[in-house]
Amino acid sequence: SMDFVSDQLYNGQRFRALTIINNYSRRCLAIEIGQSLKGCDVVNTLERLYEQYGFTPERIKVDNGPEFVSKELDRWGYERKVILDFLRPGKPTDNPFIESFNGSLRDECLNTNWFLSLHDARLKIESWRRDYNTFRPHSSLQGLTPEEVEFEMLNDRENSNLALSF
Image 1 (cartoon, rainbow, N blue to C red):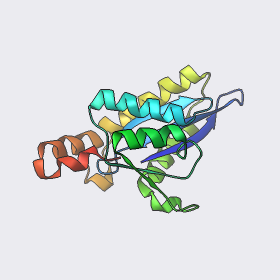
Image 2: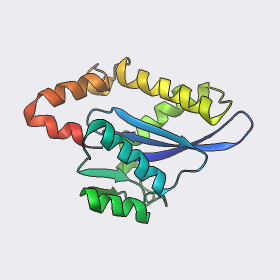
Image 3: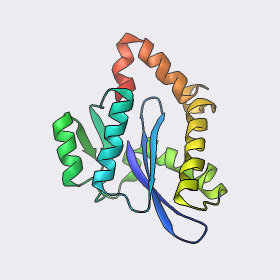
């Protein structure tokens, strides 16, 4: 799943965060920070994930925001054979995993930190993302971390395709 979260620096300057999670393992694959993020930024982030992990998902849940209803992302999805699964307008509950993740990001990171610059925001948010994935057990994952769940899924041949969706 992909979504956006907004926040601000100490001086009131707004910034946005593109969040991407694996719906099955709950692993946060990326949080891209920028003053304004557009469809081309979404595609660049997805391409970086492809280079890093060597795969693209079969489908990605997204809302109807202008960054996701862009020519760039539509072309990328077509070329990579990825289905963009658009939520019903005004129904964020159709995508509970990203909504829950974004709530945790806001409560545990965005609301507890002052960000002095975009660089500072990137560093602090990336540190939180790593902790979220590797050290913190999740009750919805039977006490495992997202990385432990993904590791188990990749080693289970029958479920290995589940580890490749977001």
